Length: 350
Image (cartoon, rainbow, N blue to C red):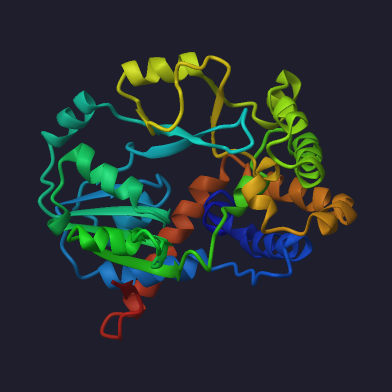
């Protein structure tokens, strides 16, 4: 998925970024899968063309970077963009269990914010959804009525998470609660999956981290992910410092829980002080991502892959790029939605 790569790079470099991401996918992709890079700008204009004539009393931008586009489309509607939920995983374990979710506002802060807002008809915007959990939890924390809440996504899962046990994907899950859902692109689990490509190069020391991640994937390939050697490597302080420089200890997680800034998944023992946690772990160290790549191709193309990762890191880490990207996305939305007035709508609604 390209959305974050586009949102963090200058518009003048978008063509280059997309070309490099496509080249990277071609070089590492498992040939047993079809690899598709949905155009996030197309997805954005699709959902905004569907939303432009609707009326909302409050908008929640969970991405943080779509607010200028939303302001251009809904200039008189209050927009909340300081609230978000982020998944945290255990990275000292090869299973990458979900520890829980950081939340940027506690319940007192939410209550205070709500005093100034009319949330009878709320629009919640996010980039991608697989399960719908973030959207459902947002409605719960803010006390929103699902039947008067609309959810918009650049990419949304229209499939099932577990057909046998009747566990629905995001769109079906949200719709079953009475919400309206609009999306620009769709994927359908379990036959399809998705990854944020920026998680392949968003790292302060990507060159060293890539090589160490590749070493871990080789060990998983040769020894198995539950082997003692893999577990030992993932608990090594030098390895953790290199691959996961921004991480939380269990003690820090407990402090966030005390502050109302962390929601436990209930699946991880948060009394275990040996666990190490992080948000958005580098994909090169993920055994799940490994199934979607051809490890031998990665090994063979290491030098060229490192060059691509280095350039993508440079292009998507420019401090000024996010501002320029947000302004240009707003301009694109304005142009596209104006040109679509009176034309058939292209957004997908379920």
